[in-house]
Every structure is written in C-alpha cells, then in structure tokens.
Length: 279
Ligand code: C2E
Ligand code: CA
Ligand code: CA
Ligand code: CA
Image 1: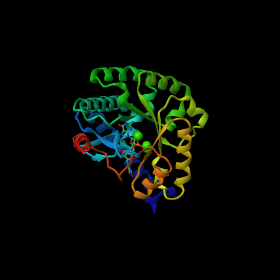
Image 2: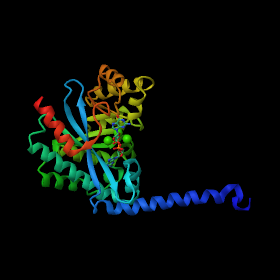
Image 3: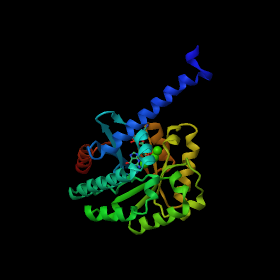
Image 4: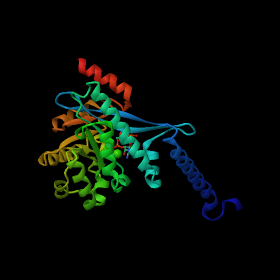
C-alpha cells in the first residue's frame, strides 16, 4: 500500500522514465545511423490509372539499427525533426534519391517514369540553405530538375504560408515538381491552394482507407477541386480492388499502395522497371 503512493504516482513514474530512456537510446543511435550506413531508401511505385504504367516512385527511408533492429519512420522521423538530425538525414535522402534517379536515367529506364518523389520535413522547409543544397545535389548528380518531385504535407505548408510561398516559387523556378502530401488532413482552402505553385495533391491514406464508405465523398471532393485547379491527384494507401475501382471512376489520376506494390529496395525496383519496359 505504501509503495503505491498518492494516486499511484510512483507506479506511473517508472513508465515515464522508461519512455525517456527509450527515446534517449533512439536518439543516440539515430545520430550514428548515417555514419554507420544503417539507412537505406526504399521506393514505392506510383501507377498512372489510365495507362497502368509506373510514372513515379516515392523514396521512403528505412532504418535498420544494429542495436534496436528495424525502426519505423513514424517513430524516428519525428525524433530526427525535434533534434535537428533531419537536416543531415534529409540531405542524405535527397542526394541518394537523386543519385539513384540519375542511374535509372542512364540505364534508359526512365522513359515512362516521370519523377522520383522525396519527402520534405517541416524543419527542412525552414532551412534557408535548402534551395542551395538542392541545386548542388542536382548539379552533382546531373539529374534534370524536372525528374525530382518534392512532397510537402498540407500541415507544414499551411504553418507558414508566406515563407513557403517564397520557397515553393524558388523550387518551381528551378523546374522541380511539387506535391502536397496527406491532403485533406489540414486546413487549406481553395483560395490558398491557388496561390501555391504546385503540381499535385495526394489524398491522405485515411480517406482512401474509408473507401467504400465515408472516404468516398471526401475523395470525390478533393479530386474535383484538384482538377478545377489543373492539379493531378494521387491516391495513397490503395490496398483493395474496390478502392481502385472507386477511385478510377472518380477520376483519380495516379495511385500508390500495397495493391500495386510495397516500397522496395532500389535493385528490386530496377528489375521491375526493366520488366515493364520489355513488356
Ligand atoms: P508518407 O509520406 O505519407 O508515406 C506513405 C506511407 O504509407 C509510407 O510509410 C508507406 O510505406 C505507406 N504505405 C504505402 N502504401 C500503403 C498501403 O497501401 N497501405 C498502408 N497501410 N500503408 C501504405 P512509411 O514508409 O512507414 O513512412 C511513414 C511516414 O514517415 C511517411 O508518410 C513520411 O511522412 C515519413 N517519412 C518516410 N521517409 C521519409 C523521409 O525520407 N523524409 C521525411 N521527411 N519523412 C519521411
Ligand atoms: Ca509522402
Ligand atoms: Ca502521405
Ligand atoms: Ca503520412
């Protein structure tokens, strides 16, 4: 009884301490991950609904930590953000993805592939050096800017509209494509969207998940709005034929999800592109 304390506070504290310990361990390991070569990019195909061709791939970071095993991006990306590790990590992601895209291009595998998409974090969008870094990477890899697409979440975009307008105009002027990720979860209005120089909206996975059902009306509305602004629409997280059928009928342009392919290592995607080319 004595050990329990007031409102079970003593029992609660060890759990909190454990969580703090775990987080410190994650952070310490994440700091070393780049140097130890523990990070890898996987690529998930994006399929054009009409032609059935792979028109893009999204680069997604994978971390196999020697101490902690596989850690999911949902767990380590927020830590990378809070600690600033994302600046180095994000630079590595950009460089690696551009290098890979340039290699695919040299192998003649990009005839149908229009772009390689890379996720930008909030911290990266606030980093004044980002534009220069991207220019240097494109230069170094000799990748045409039009083959690079950057994904920025709707939430990050709306956090600082004016600063992001400048950044996006700079990226657009450089010839880079821009896509709004997790669309429908934030608070942007059509009036705002019109001001941003963007190419594409990605319907958030949560809405696709609710098809058939409540997600249908939202997906339909997003597709109509995107098309009225001359933007293409990607549905992410497409897992079933029913979702594919509905989204196709609703006019969605591009789809991405386990129904088509999971994110895969570069070598595997290379094989897939070769196979698609010869068929
Ligand atoms: P996101 O940008 O929305 O990426 C899509 C996520 O959905 C990926 O999870 C992908 O593997 C997953 N996914 C794709 N198709 C399906 C499907 O059909 N069903 C389900 N259930 N999931 C599907 P992942 O790779 O675990 O990444 C999670 C999030 O972590 C990403 O969400 C992104 O916000 C962040 N992230 C991953 N890599 C990077 C990176 O290199 N940089 C930054 N800034 N963030 C990253
Ligand atoms: Ca994304
Ligand atoms: Ca997304
Ligand atoms: Ca997401």
